[in-house]
Image 1 (tube, rainbow, N blue to C red):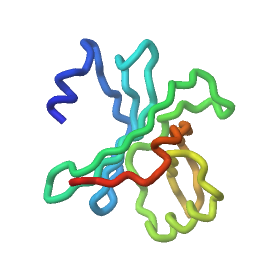
Image 2 (cartoon, rainbow, N blue to C red):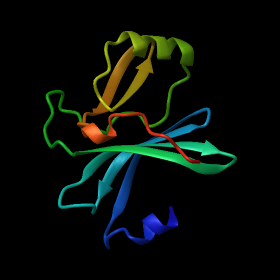
Image 3 (spheres, helix red, strand yellow):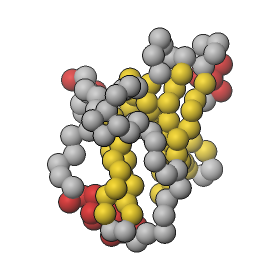
Image 4 (cartoon, rainbow, N blue to C red):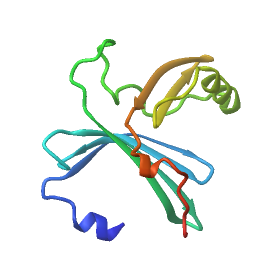
Length: 134
């Protein structure tokens, strides 16, 4: 991780929207500034093992300036409400066939009230499951 951080371009910064943890997984949702000419909305998923980062996956997509809902790709509450996690998971599974690389839902009062996603094509050479040597 330190090697990666050392190679980041001058002026790079990350605008964190939310952090979600579940078991050994931690997801970050935010915006990268400085990787290229335009900011990128990001989902980063980390697997933690023995207190250290064991694996990392991410998906990036350009920030959209105007959406049908008038909302941004990262706005909304940053802290989860007190909810029944298993009931929320079942509701999200019923939402439909998942076609996005990343889907992040906020559930309140037994309803999906917000949905953020990053849809990005997966190159054919990466379509097989990854094997981790960690």
